[in-house]
Image 1 (cartoon, rainbow, N blue to C red):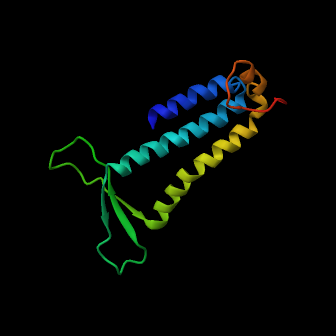
Image 2 (cartoon, one colour):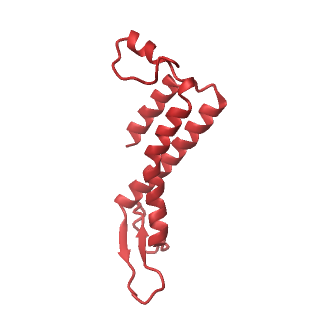
Image 3 (cartoon, rainbow, N blue to C red):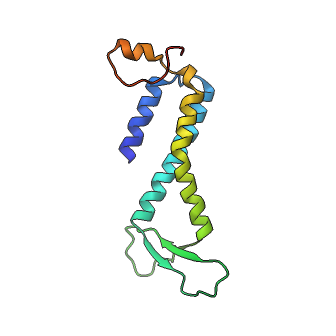
Length: 132
């Protein structure tokens, strides 16, 4: 995932005029969000999870403990208690990233290399329209 995001960032810099402050700011913010989502995904995939032991609690929750290389038995408890609502908000953020990328691509299409240039180079994918 990290390598794919790095490659995507390289392509964005090639296709969009990143000297435009709004382009750099918007795509920069999106890539920061994707880095947080990638790190969260890695933590969640490689973590230990636990369910709440008491059904009488007012709101259901899960425990999450990111794995690390500190194997000492006296390390502090770094587990995180997440309500299902908090967990759902994190999932929503990850799900929004794809749609938000398309919106950015469309918003900054005028700052992209025109599609005619790509066709001249024999590249089949279209990165914009002829009106760019």
